[in-house]
Image (tube, rainbow, N blue to C red; front, side, top):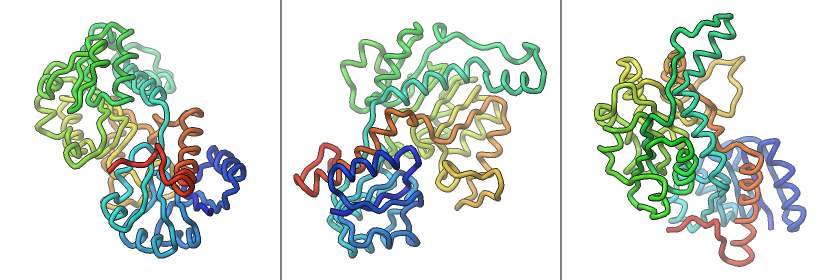
Amino acid sequence: MKIAAYEVRPDEKPIIEGLCKDYGIDLVSTPANLDATTMGMAEGCQGVTTLGQSDYSNEVLDTLRGYGVKVLASRCVGYNHMNVDYARRLGFRLCNGSYAPNGVAEYTVMAILVAIRKFKKAIYNTDDNDFTLKGKMGRELRSLTVGVLGTGKIGFTVCKLLSSFGCRILAYDVYQNDAVREYAEYVDLDTIYAESDVITIHTPLLPSTTGMINKEAIKKMKKGVVLIDNARGELCDVDALIEGMETEKIGALFMDAFPGETGIIHVPHNEDIVRTEGMPWFKLKYLRSFVNFVHTPHMAFFTEEAAASMAKCGVDSIREILTDGKSSHEIPE
Protein backbone atom coordinates (compact mmCIF):
# COMPACT_ATOMS: atom_id res chain seq x y z
CA MET A 1 0.00 0.00 0.00
CA LYS A 2 1.28 3.45 -0.92
CA ILE A 3 -0.05 6.85 0.14
CA ALA A 4 0.65 10.35 -1.15
CA ALA A 5 0.26 13.07 1.49
CA TYR A 6 -0.06 16.71 0.43
CA GLU A 7 -0.11 19.96 2.43
CA VAL A 8 1.87 18.26 5.19
CA ARG A 9 2.67 20.77 7.91
CA PRO A 10 5.77 20.37 10.10
CA ASP A 11 3.58 19.42 13.09
CA GLU A 12 1.88 16.66 11.05
CA LYS A 13 4.98 15.21 9.41
CA PRO A 14 6.26 13.03 12.30
CA ILE A 15 2.75 11.74 13.04
CA ILE A 16 2.01 10.76 9.45
CA GLU A 17 5.47 9.25 8.96
CA GLY A 18 5.25 7.33 12.25
CA LEU A 19 1.85 5.86 11.46
CA CYS A 20 2.90 4.80 7.97
CA LYS A 21 6.01 3.14 9.39
CA ASP A 22 3.96 1.30 12.01
CA TYR A 23 1.44 0.12 9.40
CA GLY A 24 4.05 -0.80 6.78
CA ILE A 25 2.72 1.80 4.34
CA ASP A 26 4.95 3.37 1.69
CA LEU A 27 4.67 7.16 1.96
CA VAL A 28 5.51 10.08 -0.29
CA SER A 29 4.78 13.51 1.12
CA THR A 30 5.13 17.21 0.40
CA PRO A 31 4.11 20.50 2.00
CA ALA A 32 2.77 21.59 -1.40
CA ASN A 33 -0.89 21.54 -2.36
CA LEU A 34 -2.26 18.87 -4.64
CA ASP A 35 -2.75 20.45 -8.06
CA ALA A 36 -1.94 19.93 -11.72
CA THR A 37 1.76 20.64 -11.10
CA THR A 38 2.17 18.22 -8.17
CA MET A 39 -0.29 15.42 -8.88
CA GLY A 40 2.42 13.32 -10.52
CA MET A 41 3.72 12.47 -7.05
CA ALA A 42 0.62 10.30 -6.53
CA GLU A 43 1.35 7.97 -9.44
CA GLY A 44 1.34 4.40 -8.14
CA CYS A 45 -0.44 5.36 -4.90
CA GLN A 46 -3.73 3.85 -3.77
CA GLY A 47 -4.60 6.72 -1.42
CA VAL A 48 -4.17 10.49 -1.32
CA THR A 49 -4.60 12.71 1.71
CA THR A 50 -4.69 16.53 1.77
CA LEU A 51 -5.84 19.44 3.86
CA GLY A 52 -8.28 22.05 2.57
CA GLN A 53 -6.30 24.13 0.06
CA SER A 54 -5.67 21.48 -2.60
CA ASP A 55 -7.19 21.43 -6.08
CA TYR A 56 -9.78 18.70 -6.64
CA SER A 57 -10.66 19.85 -10.14
CA ASN A 58 -12.01 17.39 -12.71
CA GLU A 59 -8.62 17.39 -14.42
CA VAL A 60 -6.77 16.45 -11.24
CA LEU A 61 -9.31 13.79 -10.28
CA ASP A 62 -9.22 12.23 -13.77
CA THR A 63 -5.44 12.00 -13.54
CA LEU A 64 -5.46 10.52 -10.04
CA ARG A 65 -7.95 7.89 -11.15
CA GLY A 66 -5.65 7.02 -14.03
CA TYR A 67 -2.78 6.63 -11.56
CA GLY A 68 -4.77 3.99 -9.67
CA VAL A 69 -5.76 6.11 -6.67
CA LYS A 70 -8.84 4.66 -4.96
CA VAL A 71 -9.26 6.69 -1.75
CA LEU A 72 -9.21 10.45 -1.21
CA ALA A 73 -8.94 11.54 2.41
CA SER A 74 -9.19 15.13 3.54
CA ARG A 75 -7.67 15.62 6.95
CA CYS A 76 -10.08 18.57 7.46
CA VAL A 77 -13.54 18.10 8.89
CA GLY A 78 -15.06 20.15 6.08
CA TYR A 79 -15.08 18.55 2.64
CA ASN A 80 -16.79 21.13 0.44
CA HIS A 81 -13.47 21.55 -1.41
CA MET A 82 -13.33 17.90 -2.55
CA ASN A 83 -15.54 18.06 -5.69
CA VAL A 84 -17.56 15.27 -4.11
CA ASP A 85 -20.10 14.56 -6.85
CA TYR A 86 -17.54 14.22 -9.63
CA ALA A 87 -15.17 12.21 -7.44
CA ARG A 88 -17.93 9.74 -6.65
CA ARG A 89 -18.83 9.42 -10.32
CA LEU A 90 -15.24 8.33 -10.91
CA GLY A 91 -15.56 5.72 -8.16
CA PHE A 92 -13.38 7.29 -5.47
CA ARG A 93 -14.04 6.49 -1.81
CA LEU A 94 -14.04 9.77 0.14
CA CYS A 95 -13.12 10.42 3.76
CA ASN A 96 -12.76 13.45 6.01
CA GLY A 97 -11.01 14.17 9.28
CA SER A 98 -12.37 14.54 12.77
CA TYR A 99 -11.32 16.08 16.03
CA ALA A 100 -12.93 17.05 19.30
CA PRO A 101 -15.04 20.22 19.07
CA ASN A 102 -13.45 21.85 22.12
CA GLY A 103 -10.70 23.75 20.32
CA VAL A 104 -13.01 25.62 17.92
CA ALA A 105 -15.66 26.11 20.60
CA GLU A 106 -13.15 27.61 23.05
CA TYR A 107 -11.75 29.80 20.29
CA THR A 108 -15.27 31.03 19.57
CA VAL A 109 -15.81 32.08 23.19
CA MET A 110 -12.46 33.87 23.02
CA ALA A 111 -13.54 35.60 19.80
CA ILE A 112 -16.77 36.82 21.40
CA LEU A 113 -14.87 38.22 24.37
CA VAL A 114 -12.27 39.86 22.12
CA ALA A 115 -15.08 41.53 20.17
CA ILE A 116 -17.27 42.73 23.02
CA ARG A 117 -14.29 43.96 25.12
CA LYS A 118 -12.75 45.88 22.16
CA PHE A 119 -9.50 44.01 22.59
CA LYS A 120 -8.03 44.98 19.21
CA LYS A 121 -8.31 48.69 19.97
CA ALA A 122 -6.90 48.15 23.46
CA ILE A 123 -3.85 46.30 22.14
CA TYR A 124 -3.21 48.73 19.26
CA ASN A 125 -3.54 51.80 21.49
CA THR A 126 -1.39 50.34 24.24
CA ASP A 127 1.34 49.44 21.73
CA ASP A 128 1.22 53.11 20.66
CA ASN A 129 1.54 54.24 24.30
CA ASP A 130 -2.07 55.40 24.42
CA PHE A 131 -3.17 54.24 27.86
CA THR A 132 -6.53 56.03 27.93
CA LEU A 133 -9.92 54.33 28.20
CA LYS A 134 -11.41 56.26 25.28
CA GLY A 135 -13.37 54.00 22.96
CA LYS A 136 -12.68 50.89 25.03
CA MET A 137 -15.87 50.42 27.06
CA GLY A 138 -17.10 46.88 26.58
CA ARG A 139 -20.08 44.69 27.44
CA GLU A 140 -20.53 41.75 29.81
CA LEU A 141 -21.70 38.45 28.37
CA ARG A 142 -24.21 37.91 31.15
CA SER A 143 -26.25 40.86 29.87
CA LEU A 144 -26.28 39.74 26.22
CA THR A 145 -28.25 37.39 24.01
CA VAL A 146 -26.08 35.10 21.89
CA GLY A 147 -27.43 33.40 18.78
CA VAL A 148 -25.76 30.15 17.72
CA LEU A 149 -26.33 29.16 14.08
CA GLY A 150 -25.75 25.43 13.78
CA THR A 151 -25.79 23.07 16.75
CA GLY A 152 -23.66 20.21 15.57
CA LYS A 153 -20.74 19.12 17.72
CA ILE A 154 -19.05 22.54 17.70
CA GLY A 155 -22.22 24.62 18.05
CA PHE A 156 -23.44 22.38 20.88
CA THR A 157 -20.14 22.76 22.72
CA VAL A 158 -20.28 26.55 22.23
CA CYS A 159 -23.71 26.55 23.88
CA LYS A 160 -22.41 24.56 26.83
CA LEU A 161 -19.42 26.84 27.33
CA LEU A 162 -21.50 30.01 27.01
CA SER A 163 -24.02 28.78 29.57
CA SER A 164 -21.49 29.36 32.34
CA PHE A 165 -21.45 33.09 31.55
CA GLY A 166 -25.15 33.46 32.30
CA CYS A 167 -26.09 34.88 28.90
CA ARG A 168 -29.32 34.09 27.10
CA ILE A 169 -28.60 31.60 24.31
CA LEU A 170 -30.74 31.20 21.19
CA ALA A 171 -30.06 28.40 18.71
CA TYR A 172 -31.01 27.53 15.16
CA ASP A 173 -30.51 24.30 13.26
CA VAL A 174 -32.48 22.42 10.63
CA TYR A 175 -31.91 19.31 12.75
CA GLN A 176 -32.59 20.10 16.39
CA ASN A 177 -30.82 18.29 19.21
CA ASP A 178 -32.69 17.71 22.48
CA ALA A 179 -29.40 17.88 24.41
CA VAL A 180 -28.94 21.48 23.25
CA ARG A 181 -32.22 22.49 24.89
CA GLU A 182 -30.55 22.18 28.30
CA TYR A 183 -28.45 25.25 27.40
CA ALA A 184 -30.29 27.11 24.61
CA GLU A 185 -33.71 27.86 23.20
CA TYR A 186 -34.34 26.82 19.60
CA VAL A 187 -35.92 29.60 17.54
CA ASP A 188 -36.26 30.48 13.87
CA LEU A 189 -33.64 32.46 11.94
CA ASP A 190 -35.60 35.70 12.02
CA THR A 191 -35.76 35.54 15.82
CA ILE A 192 -32.01 34.90 15.99
CA TYR A 193 -31.38 37.94 13.80
CA ALA A 194 -33.82 40.23 15.60
CA GLU A 195 -32.95 39.41 19.21
CA SER A 196 -29.25 38.47 19.29
CA ASP A 197 -26.54 40.87 20.41
CA VAL A 198 -23.94 38.35 19.24
CA ILE A 199 -24.31 35.82 16.41
CA THR A 200 -21.81 33.01 15.95
CA ILE A 201 -21.92 30.77 12.87
CA HIS A 202 -21.29 27.01 12.99
CA THR A 203 -23.24 25.68 10.01
CA PRO A 204 -21.68 23.51 7.29
CA LEU A 205 -21.05 25.10 3.90
CA LEU A 206 -23.78 23.81 1.60
CA PRO A 207 -25.54 25.33 -1.42
CA SER A 208 -28.37 26.26 0.94
CA THR A 209 -26.07 28.01 3.43
CA THR A 210 -23.64 29.73 1.04
CA GLY A 211 -23.97 33.48 1.54
CA MET A 212 -26.61 33.05 4.25
CA ILE A 213 -25.28 36.14 6.06
CA ASN A 214 -26.27 38.59 3.34
CA LYS A 215 -27.77 42.07 3.12
CA GLU A 216 -31.28 40.85 3.89
CA ALA A 217 -30.11 38.91 6.94
CA ILE A 218 -28.06 41.82 8.25
CA LYS A 219 -31.02 44.19 7.82
CA LYS A 220 -32.94 42.01 10.27
CA MET A 221 -30.20 42.19 12.92
CA LYS A 222 -29.84 44.59 15.83
CA LYS A 223 -27.80 47.73 15.23
CA GLY A 224 -24.34 47.05 16.65
CA VAL A 225 -24.62 43.27 16.33
CA VAL A 226 -21.41 41.29 16.86
CA LEU A 227 -20.76 38.64 14.20
CA ILE A 228 -18.39 35.70 14.61
CA ASP A 229 -17.45 33.38 11.72
CA ASN A 230 -15.06 30.60 12.68
CA ALA A 231 -16.60 28.14 10.21
CA ARG A 232 -16.37 28.92 6.48
CA GLY A 233 -15.92 32.34 4.91
CA GLU A 234 -18.34 31.56 2.10
CA LEU A 235 -21.20 31.46 4.60
CA CYS A 236 -21.02 35.26 4.46
CA ASP A 237 -21.51 37.72 1.61
CA VAL A 238 -18.39 39.82 2.06
CA ASP A 239 -19.87 42.86 0.32
CA ALA A 240 -22.80 42.77 2.73
CA LEU A 241 -20.34 42.57 5.63
CA ILE A 242 -18.43 45.59 4.32
CA GLU A 243 -21.65 47.60 4.01
CA GLY A 244 -22.63 46.54 7.51
CA MET A 245 -19.31 47.70 8.90
CA GLU A 246 -19.42 51.00 7.01
CA THR A 247 -22.94 51.81 8.22
CA GLU A 248 -22.13 50.61 11.77
CA LYS A 249 -24.99 48.12 11.63
CA ILE A 250 -22.31 45.59 12.55
CA GLY A 251 -20.69 46.62 15.83
CA ALA A 252 -17.83 44.14 15.62
CA LEU A 253 -16.78 41.38 13.23
CA PHE A 254 -14.44 38.47 13.99
CA MET A 255 -13.53 36.18 11.09
CA ASP A 256 -11.24 33.18 11.32
CA ALA A 257 -12.49 32.15 7.89
CA PHE A 258 -12.74 34.43 4.86
CA PRO A 259 -14.32 33.85 1.42
CA GLY A 260 -11.70 33.18 -1.24
CA GLU A 261 -8.98 32.65 1.34
CA THR A 262 -7.14 29.93 -0.62
CA GLY A 263 -3.74 31.34 -1.51
CA ILE A 264 -3.96 33.88 1.31
CA ILE A 265 -4.10 31.92 4.54
CA HIS A 266 -1.35 29.62 5.81
CA VAL A 267 1.10 31.32 3.43
CA PRO A 268 3.57 34.09 4.33
CA HIS A 269 2.86 37.30 2.44
CA ASN A 270 5.07 39.71 4.35
CA GLU A 271 7.58 39.95 1.49
CA ASP A 272 5.47 39.58 -1.65
CA ILE A 273 2.40 40.84 -3.48
CA VAL A 274 -0.72 38.82 -2.72
CA ARG A 275 -2.32 37.62 -5.92
CA THR A 276 -5.50 35.58 -5.65
CA GLU A 277 -8.36 34.91 -8.06
CA GLY A 278 -10.95 37.66 -7.76
CA MET A 279 -8.54 39.61 -5.57
CA PRO A 280 -10.37 38.95 -2.28
CA TRP A 281 -7.24 40.29 -0.58
CA PHE A 282 -8.35 43.86 -1.27
CA LYS A 283 -11.67 43.33 0.51
CA LEU A 284 -9.93 41.60 3.39
CA LYS A 285 -7.34 44.38 3.60
CA TYR A 286 -10.11 46.98 3.67
CA LEU A 287 -11.96 45.18 6.44
CA ARG A 288 -8.72 44.84 8.40
CA SER A 289 -8.52 48.63 8.51
CA PHE A 290 -11.56 48.75 10.79
CA VAL A 291 -10.68 48.84 14.48
CA ASN A 292 -13.68 46.63 15.23
CA PHE A 293 -12.67 43.90 12.74
CA VAL A 294 -10.45 40.99 13.77
CA HIS A 295 -9.10 38.45 11.30
CA THR A 296 -7.12 35.32 12.14
CA PRO A 297 -5.70 32.85 9.59
CA HIS A 298 -8.18 29.95 9.86
CA MET A 299 -6.62 28.65 13.05
CA ALA A 300 -9.57 28.01 15.36
CA PHE A 301 -9.01 24.27 14.88
CA PHE A 302 -5.25 24.48 15.41
CA THR A 303 -4.44 22.80 18.71
CA GLU A 304 -1.98 20.01 19.42
CA GLU A 305 -4.86 17.66 20.12
CA ALA A 306 -6.84 18.47 16.98
CA ALA A 307 -3.82 18.48 14.66
CA ALA A 308 -2.76 15.03 15.86
CA SER A 309 -6.28 13.69 15.38
CA MET A 310 -6.52 15.09 11.85
CA ALA A 311 -3.17 13.63 10.81
CA LYS A 312 -4.17 10.23 12.17
CA CYS A 313 -7.50 10.33 10.33
CA GLY A 314 -5.73 10.99 7.04
CA VAL A 315 -3.72 7.78 7.28
CA ASP A 316 -6.18 5.57 9.15
CA SER A 317 -9.12 6.22 6.82
CA ILE A 318 -7.15 5.19 3.73
CA ARG A 319 -5.70 2.10 5.43
CA GLU A 320 -9.09 1.01 6.78
CA ILE A 321 -10.87 1.24 3.44
CA LEU A 322 -8.08 -0.49 1.52
CA THR A 323 -7.78 -3.31 4.07
CA ASP A 324 -11.25 -3.64 5.66
CA GLY A 325 -13.42 -2.09 2.97
CA LYS A 326 -14.89 0.49 5.34
CA SER A 327 -13.94 3.34 7.65
CA SER A 328 -15.78 5.38 10.27
CA HIS A 329 -14.27 8.45 8.56
CA GLU A 330 -15.94 7.81 5.19
CA ILE A 331 -18.17 10.67 4.04
CA PRO A 332 -21.76 9.41 3.90
CA GLU A 333 -23.62 9.66 0.61
